[in-house]
Length: 408
Image (cartoon, rainbow, N blue to C red; front, side, top):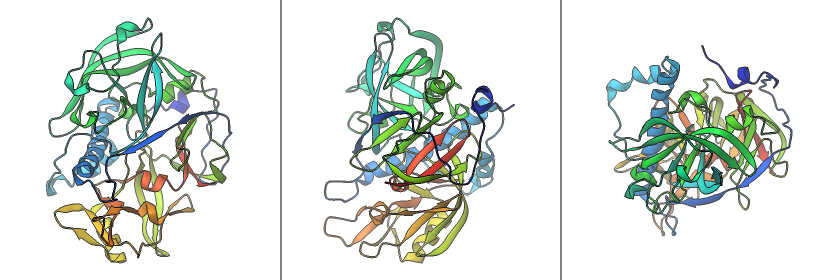
């Protein structure tokens, strides 16, 4: 039986709407820092980092499909659809790497130990490097469970596969996790004794990852940290929100920041609880509806927008783009002829700025630009920060919906 967080929290109202709605504005702000390893200083692309980032995003999503089946006993509907198409060939996956990091500070244990973490809506587990970790954790702040009087060793090992035989592994613990004064008591998380190569300090500046999706794709099959905060009554509202626009990158817990957006939110219901998976009404290109009913995952851990191969090929054909030789995921188009593109959710259209659609240039002298919409794989579009930096985004864990509003 599928038990939602809304079912568990009977004292909170269950409300779903596809029309614009307001959210209470209480809550706590967490400043975010940004670091990208995908684009060089001259705006050209670091393809070694990009290819790893693209592959890792796909590996993360595919791993979630497998975990969903392990946790629920049923195949994820999208995994069933994908299985029908696997005979056409598989995609080799490289180690997990986050190219564009949006990270903030949390504390763990008693007394509190301070760590930086990536806040990732495309996964559900909280992972830190441990003091007994090998050289793969060098440069990170290491967690010592023995130094916390509230730490509990669950005697449960974990292994997280990240493709190409690479993995992170360690032990599961429970302890108190605090984010700007909000404490999740007895939170389950992983303490790694080995990190995957993608977590090397030169690529991954944060110490760990805090997943913010749903329990059904948790490797530990436990509540993610934010859901624990909600069930323990720590938040004003069961929502969190992101602003990815300079000068104030921010994660807001327990409400929304009224200074960051204007108007009301347009909400779209999560179609399958696991990821923040929603239906995009349409993609509009140069004033014409290009795609409709797009199955999408809203993923703060991805810098790019990944579309289905046929969709992306048709998109660039329509705007005069051409595929990049020897790199089948990317297309280029003239830098001085950026198309007008918008995504529509629940009847509201949200334009994407030209600078968001340009991921980088071919080289420092080039007039050709790489597009931020790239070739993904079935069965989803993965909507990353190339779109999210154009909107203020709220995630509602009880009503299982995502809302977008115009930026202030």
